[in-house]
Image (cartoon, rainbow, N blue to C red):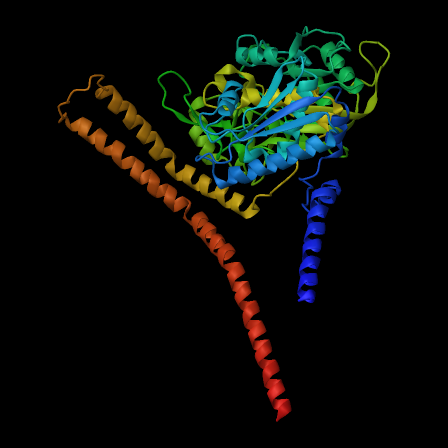
Length: 580
């Protein structure tokens, strides 16, 4: 009896000690986490930690994550936890300068009302962030998207930087083309986000107060303006430059300034001035002239997400970018520049002589005749590295100034037409956002600019190739049918206009209308059949890949179980044989 009591008392004492240890000592133990991911996506980068050391006053971050929102799928829920973990890492690394508030807003609650009031997107359940600083305005991230997971650390760091430095960065604008009318929408948004200083086209020197410069079509600028750009970049000015073999914004204003090629060569890049980029896969429809039928314009391209380097800040929250009559960039030989493509063509692209576009009626024949190279062509790129001056002897007898530098930072875009409202408004695109993203990143302080995106996943290269091939096959076979369908729809609308009133309409027995109606109903069926045929091999490969991924683990487990069974059976057989 006594032994039972002692045993019971011992268990009670051990339980009390275990409880006291958990209540008192466990909270004092250091919170140790190991990050085994290849890109260390769960660990703050040194640049982000350096940014946090510059905080001068406390910040409050309000993270809204509607955990039980019915419209939120599992992907968003997992990403919400990922965002929360990273925000907690920011809070801990800030050493008391960041106060994180995690809020789960239920439908129609006061928290949900506040989230909507501050502009957070609740379409799929709130998943956004609001930042505040005493005595200053607020900043927000409307919604965190899993598509931009590689930019998550930059997104949060960018919001923190804007809370500490709400003033607008200064951007110098130097253009060889008239932009007020053709690119009015872009300029309006630039003036809202930046302090834009417009420079004269014949400027002799870029003011030292301008640390970020945007240059448009420098081929139309005089020699001394090119010299001013050259010296400014060597002094450390960040540059975003738009060059174009054929600019549709102001063709009359373009002059053949051959010094531009020397300037590009000094920066380690080149762009053929007489070549246009055509792309059979990304080509858009265009009307060559009034009353003319719509055809595919192989030089007007709609670049989807897969044509962008998604791990660069310039591609932050972009959908598609539209370019028109663009060129192609490449590195010169024997240079040490870091060349990061931002926008690229598909593999169904080629460089053609610009003179072949003199006649708009040749668009269809150009598509049929184009021999693609099977490789991407770079339309926009980020460059970092050493560079030399294109004016080693100075300018007009003036003594030479800066001759080289160890580091320049610039973004080069081989198109000016993406700035135009006519191109931006023709189809839904992210042209303006691309320019704003790039300028904002170039104007950011070094600590923020050095925060690099983390590559989370890599796409399957073979699947990309098969998708491009299937899309090209479908486009070649469907072009004529799509044009017939468009003509039939227009003829049907012209001969049978829609009625606004909700009354019963008499069936028109006109033979021509019936034939048009039959064709406009039949052509989509034929197009669907062509698309199914073109993508059949891709779908078969995807199904095979899914089947292999699903069955691989059970098959491996079964093989291991079979091996263990045979191994145990063989051991028993040897044991029985040894006994006998």
